[in-house]
Image (cartoon, rainbow, N blue to C red; front, top):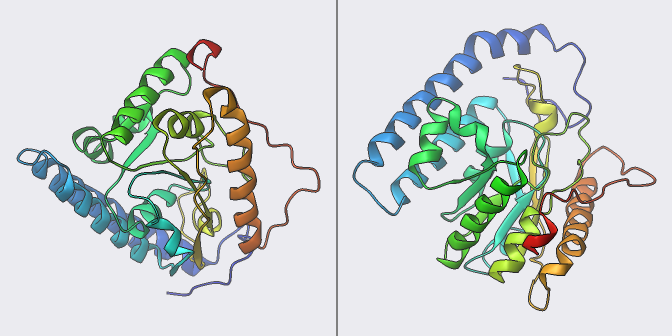
Amino acid sequence: MTRHALGPRPDTLPLSNRFLSLFVQAPIFFSSTAFFGSLSLAASLFEKDGKLQHRIAQAWARTSVRISGCPVSVLGEENLRQYPVAVYTCNHLSYMDTPVIFGSLPFQFRIVARHDLWKLPFIGWHLRRSGQVPVNVDNPRASISSLSSAVKTLKSGMPLFIFPEGGRTESGHPNAFLNGPAFMAIRAQVPIVPMALVGTHELLPIHTAQFYPVPITLAVGKPIETTGYSMRQVEELTARLSDEICRLYYAHSYLKAPAQPTLEAITEIPESAL
C-alpha cells in the first residue's frame, strides 16, 4: 500500500488508491465495524461498567486505522494523564477522526456526539449500549439536557471527549466552536484538554468514500484549568480553547492559518442556563 506525504489531496486519486479503497479497504472496514459492533452489543448484555465495550471500541479503532494504511503519531502524550478526569477536545476533519481518537487515548472515556449517530447500525448500537452521551445541536433545550447529563458523567469520575465544532469541516480549516465543551468543563470544574488532528482530512474528507493514506498526527496541548472560571465566562473559555487547538493544528499542518481568523464561538446555550 502506497503512503503519500502529507499535502493537498488530489482532485482525482490515483487509480491504485481508488481500486484499493473500493474493493479492499471499504469492504474490510464495514465488515470489521459490523464484527466489533456485534461484539460490543453482546458484551453490553452482561457488563455494567463499559470497560469491555471500551476495549472492543479501541480494537475496532486500531483495526480501522490499520485498514486505512496511515501511521499515527501522538505528540504531547504526557498531557493525556495529568488529570484523572477532564474534557478532551479536538478539531473535526473526517469520519476517521473517531477511530484515531479511540485508538490513541490510553484510558477509558465517554464521547459526546451528535444524536443522529445513534441511528446508525452497529455504531449506534455501541453508542447506545456503552453509555455515550448524545447531544442535539439543532435543539437548544435538548442540547442543555444532554450537556447536563454529560456533566453528571464527569462528576462520576469518567473523562469525556467531544468535537467542539459539532461537525466535520469541508475546507480542512477548523470551523467555529460550539460552547458545549466549555460549559461542561466549567460546570463540572474539571480541566479541558485541547488536541489537534492533522491528516485525516486528506485521508478521508467529508463527502468522499476513498482513502488517501498520509501520516496522521494527534498533537495534545497542555490542559486548561477551569478553576476560577464562572458560567458567565463560557465564551471566553471557548475562544481560548479555539485559539489553542488552531495553534496546534497549524503548527503541524501544511495549511497556513488565515491572516485574519474569523472563528467565533457559536452560542447554543440559552442565557438562562448560565
